[in-house]
Image (tube, one colour):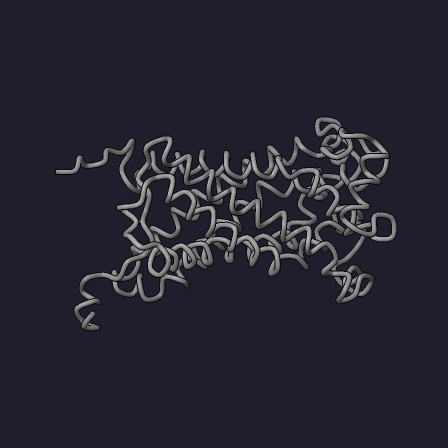
Length: 312
């Protein structure tokens, strides 16, 4: 008889959600910091396309102007901001998904699971972005303003002293506009793709797959979800970059200035960055769960009562 797997905590207990928060912090903080150079060039391309023109030219110009140090400018607010955001986002998603599912019967939770994923992810992201916004504003200011300090501990007090506390949240609405659709797509498409892979691609049930095989499938589903995320959230990403560089700008003014084509500038870089980023985040998050011995909710399965009703 196979030995029953033992876990470090109970599913949906306080410890479970605390570990989800720690896993989310590690997953988002590490991956976003890792791609800081690509994010820096993308931001500069969005706010000054005349100078940087393309991703490859952007890397070359940035390196010539300040060496390798110039390419990792903004790593500190990226690490702190996305660690905080990741912890709230992943733990919040797990919490809201669980809570919303308990508000309806088991069959409805299964039949309308996509709406449940969308509602849970949007709720989590709305809260998470309140933690991210000050650090995102600081990061973009450091990366896109020529001659600006490269130290977060100097940048944040300077921004606070010269422009007031509101400067850190001026970009919150467009940040929500970028991050909420991104996260809704990130979690719902990941869940659906993973469900599809286990149902139609993998030749054996999930419980018979090794931990390594499960993590490979997690990364694959995460990467596919990331590509979709990049597309739906890119216009707002461009607006956020422009607003944080020039606090006096308005969303309407930015849209009329850059036009329909300009709002999509930098999309290829964002697809590469976000696809890799999202795949790695899910891999690290799921790997953290394996490492800490957490129970991992399986992909949605049809309740037996519904199966009998449908004659399946």
